[in-house]
Each structure stands twice: as structure tokens, then as C-alpha cells.
Amino acid sequence: MGSTLHARLASFGSIALVALAPCAFSVSCGGGQPPPQNVGTTPATESSGTDTEPKVIIEDATEVWYDDTPASPKSKVREYDYDVTWSTTIKGSDAPPEIKKRRVRVVFPVPKVEPKDARDPHVVNRILWDARKQMAACFYKGMKREPTDEMSMVGFLELNKKGELKNAGVEKSDEKMKPGGIDDCIVENVKGLAFPAAGDDTKIRFKLKLQIVDGTALQDFEDTPVTK
Image 1 (tube, one colour):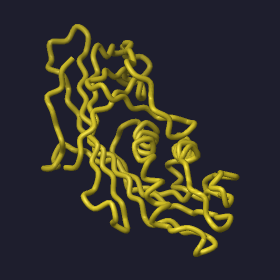
Image 2 (image 1 turned 180 degrees about the vertical axis):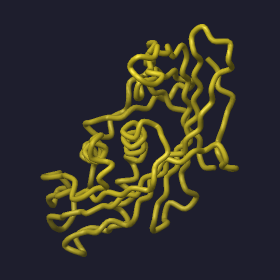
Image 3 (image 1 turned 60 degrees about the vertical axis):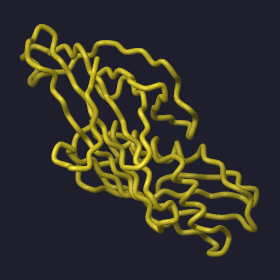
Image 4 (image 1 turned 90 degrees about the vertical axis):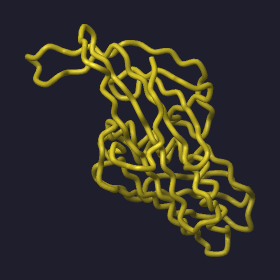
């Protein structure tokens, strides 16, 4: 798989996460800003079922992310995979840690640009690609880390000749993405991207396809021993 990125996440969903690498990563609802370093962890609780059943303390939860960049950045359709491994142990239990694996995939079809010749759509796609990690995190967190069907959304950006953002939003998205605000989270991160000047005011319509799959049976899944 392409270049490897270890990233640090804290408090994703209801489980506390521990970092294993110096390069941190988090969702930004302001777009494209570097995440904080040296994020700490705290215990979290998770319900084991009904309200009448006892709650389980997650004593340890470790998560490792792998960054996969496609070999050909000039490809018309960019595909981005993030492999995630995490383990949890239960306080007072002698059971071995439970290991789970997820692959988060984000597919970038070529955007549509209006007027047609105002900007190179492949250049636009490359710039959108810069927010791929934030997009993957928005989807991963919003879907509670569980496998999903492939979902899609269409966002839009309106830029002036200087490349300054004048408007942005969600044109349409899969119904399952809306309750968690996944589509809005993605657009917020896209707002922080820097676009160059162009010959005309431009409206960009970009489509994304997103999915989480169980990585247990994937032969090319990037795995590593998980430590506390």
C-alpha cells in the first residue's frame, strides 16, 4: 500500500483512543488545519445492551491509522483508503483484548466546473484531495466506526476570480449521512482549502463516494501489533 501515516486520534465516538505516532490527526470543522499534538486519553463507558444491564468500562482503546495514497495521482478518479486497527480491554476481565479492523474508503470522481473552462477540474480534484483525511474521519466518526454500504454526497463551492470562497454547501447526500452531520462536516473541512486565482467566477460541484468495510478478511489490509 502507498505511503504510511500513523495518526493520533482522541475521543472518537464513545471510546477513548491512544496515539502511537508523532503525526496527529483529527476532524476539523474549520477546514484543513493541522490537528493538535500530544492529545491525552480518558476512560470512557459503553453500554453492553439495555439500560438495565451493567455498563462496561473500556480500560484501554488503541487505534492506528494507515494512509494509502494511489500510485498514480493523475488518475481521473482518485481513491483513498484509510486502514484502522483498534483494540479494547475490559476492566476486571482476563479476556484478551478485542481487535477490530476497518477500512475507510473515499472515492473522488472528477468535479464539474461552471463555466466549463473557468478552471481545470483535475486541478480542483487535486485540491479537494488535500482534505481526504478529514473527509474520512468525518465519515468514520459519524458512522460510529461500523461497516456501511457505499454512500455518496454532492457538495458545491462558489469562488471568485481570486480563488476566494464566497459560498459552500451540500447539494444532496445519502439520507444515512444526514443524522450525524457527516456531509456538513466534510464541507466545513473543504472550506479551508486554498484555490488559485482563475479567469472567471466559478461554481464547483464535487461528488464523493464513501464506505467503511470490515478489514478482517482483506489480504492487503495494513496491520500492526497494537500496544498500550
